[in-house]
Amino acid sequence: MTARRSIIPVFVPHLGCPHMCVFCNQRRISGEQHPASAGDVERAVAEGLARLPAGTPVTLAFYGGSFTAIPAAEQEELLGAAQPFLSRGEIAGIRLSTRPDAIDDAVLERLRRFGVRTVELGVQSMDEEVLRLSERGHTPEDARRAAKMVREAGFELILQMMTGLPGDTPERSLMTAREFCSLRPDGVRIYPTVIIRETPLYDMWTSGAYQEHTVEEAVGLCAQLAEIFDASGIPVIRLGLNPTEELSAGDAAGGAYHPALGELVLSRRYLARERELLGPSDAGRVVTFLVPKGRTSAATGQHRANVSALMGEFCLKGVKFTESDLPPLTVRRA
Ligand code: SF4
Image (tube, rainbow, N blue to C red; front, side, top):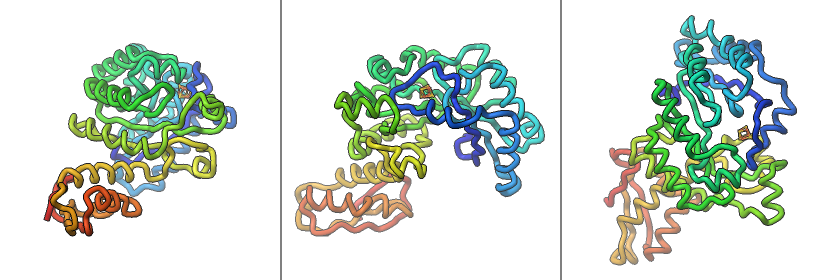
């Protein structure tokens, strides 16, 4: 799927966004930037192609809000600028992200005409109350309808969900994941809520109206979500916000921001498998686990967190790992 291709990103400041989701600071960002133009697209693609080895499969991705909510003429200008690259075979596809309530037949017809291959829907939650408290401005039913339309129109469908939003609970996130599976996306992205400065969520947090979703909570919950998606054969193509200098330097004031969130979640999934292989009779023993090649670090956990947890819980004398020819996420006792 296109998720594995090299991506050339074009940021589309979301000037026309009719909403103010409590967690989003797109307006502040877009206020500091100029709208993307055809020239920006041409430059980004030409520069991106120049950096990549010839023959690399490349996808042009429009990031930064709700592409199909911007005026149709601007959408056509941006998509039109990509056409020469598409027709020369220099880019293999176009992907973009948008809101569930910014999808209709005319929108999908336009995207098809301009060679868009992948549509990402920012759904965030399938719980009515979470969407309302987060001021998303759309309903779970909008998401169901849009996902069905995108899929039936033949596009690749990627669904994005968040955890830890206002009103959210682990049960509601697990329900969202199960509903996502029933919508049969080609992939999902999971973004635990990060409290970004200059957002309504930041004010809610500082006033005590919102409790932050901690990294620890997010890791435990995302490990469960990943199991649900895995069981349905749906790839999780992103877990956690992309780390940026601004976020790391303080724009992320609280919440589940961690530059290596995906690795923490993977380690947690290994920990669950390791636990299942242990029992009271292991007390006082040194236990050796067989893990897939290249996965000793994930199985050990950051700062040996998995080892410490298992030694404490099962009174082990030690834990060792041996890499073996095993499928991903498989752990056995030696
Ligand atoms: S719809 Fe998207 S861009 Fe607009 S405020 Fe919400 S998250 Fe931000």
